[in-house]
Image (cartoon, rainbow, N blue to C red; front, side, top):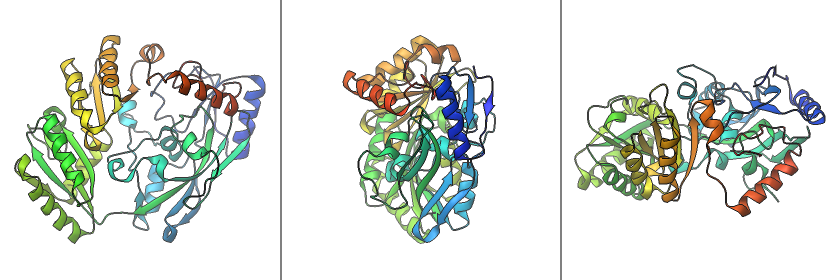
Length: 403
């Protein structure tokens, strides 16, 4: 357990902290505001190094659709800044603060989102967080400042450090500044909704919707228990396909999509307010039927296998829903080794991967919180870790024991 929280006010001071701990060989728990601390394996460290003191914007060029901000800048501040110019974060990052912290509020940071590569429903159309990171500044395990990428697309030669650090959970470097591509926000949001479908039929409907020329930007399936937690939900399952754009375009395209999906049942159209509320709940997993003591898994598979994984987990007593057209499976269930084994077995059978988002600390310390890598990939990961963090002081064991 960490015994001190260090909050350096700038990058130079942060690098100094890392250099001091590197010289002493003392591990650091790296975090922003700590909203994702319960994800993955617990870290045993002498100190907690927080980036919350690194805040503010070093660049925002609305006409160029580019923003640079310090890692400790909150997502709320980033979104507010973008909203002033009618723009948005492309990957629609989820806020799991309540899910991970038992209802606690929390203010997640930009650095935390990039370090975990957490993306929301829009990923199915626009890609993950890592696809929109143009540049990064970070401090490696020696305390040396690194810079990768820049402020334009296709500005990478050699090893793409942006891709490497995004999603590394602070195990390779402490991100201090991020440059992102942003996009104009939609004027209107509409959702085409089918009720009462089973999971496999719902995935077929979502696949059809995503294959049509109406630019669907969200595709989710909520079984009845999850649908009951969604704004506008009732006693039946819901299959939802979202369209975002100019008002007139959304009106036309949602109607065309509704007609196109008639073979799957009678569809309705949710308006802007109802759509926004429902997709926020899906994004943040507020629809997940989770009990306070449940473990929570976040699973990525081929969309065609999502329904099978969901059904297999539910047969074992788990509960969940699908996003990304079936490619994302969110599950909650008893925090036991038996349940974990059943879920991870189903995921491996489907050729997918899992992340243990939440569980009691003893469970997180004893089970595989992410899938084991193939020997060749594991060897590469160890070599990269040895170069980036020679003494293994940055979030040691966060993802995999010994790394």
